[in-house]
Image 1 (cartoon, rainbow, N blue to C red):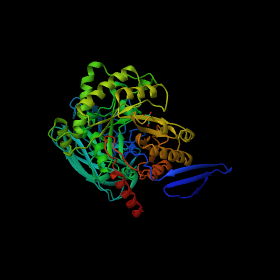
Image 2 (cartoon, protein in one colour; image 1 turned 45 degrees about the vertical axis):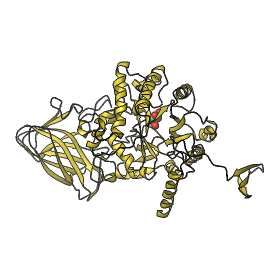
Image 3 (cartoon, protein in one colour; image 1 turned 90 degrees about the vertical axis):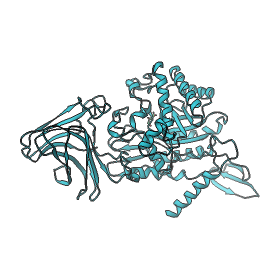
Image 4 (cartoon, rainbow, N blue to C red; image 1 turned 180 degrees about the vertical axis):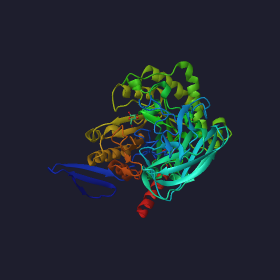
Length: 571
Ligand code: AHR
């Protein structure tokens, strides 16, 4: 352990660092010399739907497979009826089949038809166990809704219930399905008893046939009381980090498992029953109920800048189970439409409510701009000629149509090597404002590389350390990351953004470790690494904006300090 001996002489502060073996190093600190400016957006978060982070996690929906769209391509044993079970109560007779002839929407192609025989008994219907059980709190209200239509017979009385595993009723409501066109019906249940492992039960109570789709159970209490919103406790834990930005939706999820699996932002907006869910590269289903609107709204709710990542028109290099060689490139004839999608995102986020895509944002309840400033293109892609060509086309189009947008490029999945070098070469050629570096290394690596950014060329692109972690959730990992974060701050003039990864992991569904926050259906467990992030973030020096050519602004820092003071007072 080093002892520090201090002596203050005018503005020059000599410091002697004395090691246990007696050797000493003298450092002189000039208090009048200006420090390096620090990016006001240095510390943020990266949210990816990995480890059941979205469905079954941050997204508050409690029904699993609500649209009957689970498929064997996601998990070999899955199908449209996965997580649903037919129930016949008393002497009830009936059956359920999956159909697709007259769907609710073309992008939501499957639904079920429930047939109830002459003998109704105590009802015939469906049971859903949620994601590892449904956590129910006594006295809280849960909104139930589904789309339905009569297929045969008259109007159908339906009971919706929350039940314990042994069929004890925790709360229920009644409604009716009437009419031959798809119609949304809804009710609210306020259970009188709590149960951490409840079931949702829908019981039809007359002979006949009804079609059902998009069966939803949502706690009324969500983060910021948003309908179709986020789980309050998890979102709150994230909010308490006070991230300056949120990168989403991935990660490998963004560039996808093959071209057909690229995350398409347009499929994730609009009414939830019209969104196009798809297989998650992490081998489960993404309902995209947590879609681009909800991501942007969450950013706004927590005061963070949105940093969406769109694929660079190439898929993940690990696609089709071909590690390193699975990258597929979008055919050139599809590039104009793809580039238009990218430009449309900017209009959707920032354009006036009178513009084509701005109007869709306004329709969803947000006429004001979302103030998109950063846009990631590509995620740690293999830097191939196919990638370079497509990235350049997208980059040039954004620069031309939207010079106000800061594009974040990508330099491969490692802190050095072929992709890293090629990525940086492209960054230099194109003058990309920021590039995204990723590395998951041992804690010792982080300690051995504390000087990494000290020698970075200040005239080149700035760095977004978009994904990093020191492979563990121990105190040693946390200390190594803390030490490293001080070097990010010290180099806050070149390291513009940084985010630990991954953010969330559901116990029992974790594909990637370490993570920042672990959770179950009703508990949240921030890791020691989370506490390091939380401790270090509020500190800052002078701040500088990327687009600023004039004097360095002090304002964001003052705000940060004020916030820190407030947080200390509230402690
Ligand atoms: O953070 C988990 C994964 O790590 C991301 O999806 C990917 O970008 C990286 O390989």
